[in-house]
Image 1 (tube, one colour):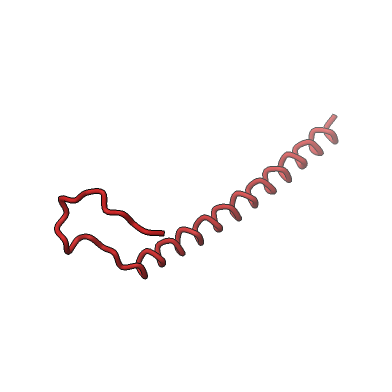
Image 2: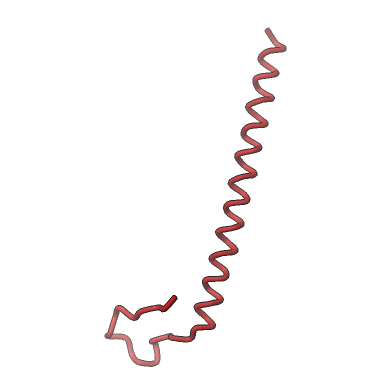
Length: 62
């Protein structure tokens, strides 16, 4: 992916076109996205387990 400068008022030395920095940024974003997806899946499984436990408790109470 190519970063495009949208503000031409920036001084030339602030036009960062270092692709390795962008690659590192995209890599970090991918890792964070993966971590968030894993955590979301874990939370969904835990929620389901808690709901099942609550149903069992209510069933045994009656």
